Length: 130
Image 1 (cartoon, rainbow, N blue to C red):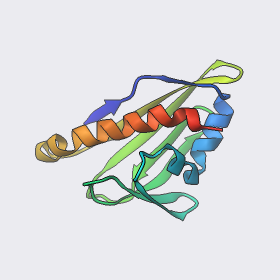
Image 2: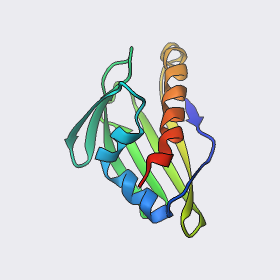
Image 3: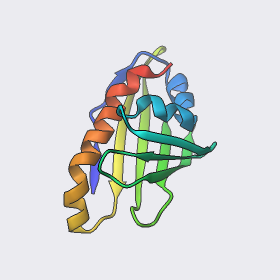
């Protein structure tokens, strides 16, 4: 299953956006309201959406100022969440989130709606980057 958000313009440099996303504590600021969020260590956090199991994400990769990749720590729900960052102007970046996972058809049907809404909210909250 592959999902992506529309590109979102952020009034920050791509370096600022990248540094913000590389600090996993900052993902709490992007999460939907009433989402459980717990930092496990500097590269791992746990979150839980209403009606969904807890998910642990690891910071898998960072390509300076252009890409941040998070991935599920468990093989039960194998997926990645990638933020692609492009410069639009010196203090303006464009960010697109891409979700990619391998699920059986039943699981895909169950999670597609909540995951689409979740990554949409993360994208909408990109204006909180500072």
